[in-house]
Length: 175
Image (cartoon, rainbow, N blue to C red; front, side):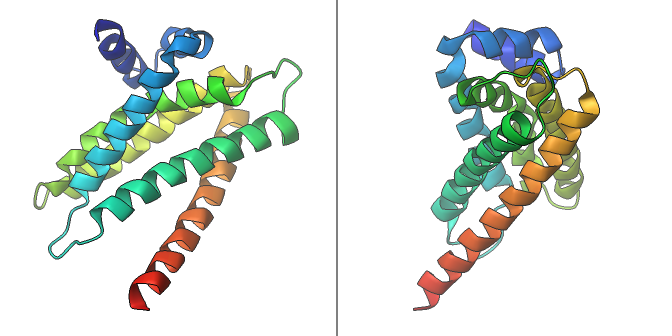
């Protein structure tokens, strides 16, 4: 548990050494997935609105969105926009981006009236910065801007998938 918390703090602080550590440690995959789940639950709780009835669907949608994002980042980053030194597998990306989800845990504070939205926006931006560092390290990029581009492309694809999931869910609930 000590190494999990230490790694979460290091990831939140955007410490390159932490991302390199989890990238190389195949045993950290379970920890990374736990962080993603914890962040997804925090986001679900922080986004609760009066009359909300689809909490489990929101949680599952969030997890599917993250998995889609990781896959798209891997495809774009390794297959379409690699640098000369780029070599990575999906496991490395799961571990680094899983720990990069740590700031998302703060989104649980989205439930706080009047101030929650500020925390949500800040936590989202912090998570995005952590994701860029995680992707840069997992894909062995020298260029942070290439990592930003890959993250943005992956995020756009993730939004499309989330929208399609929402459309399917709405269709299923209205029939």
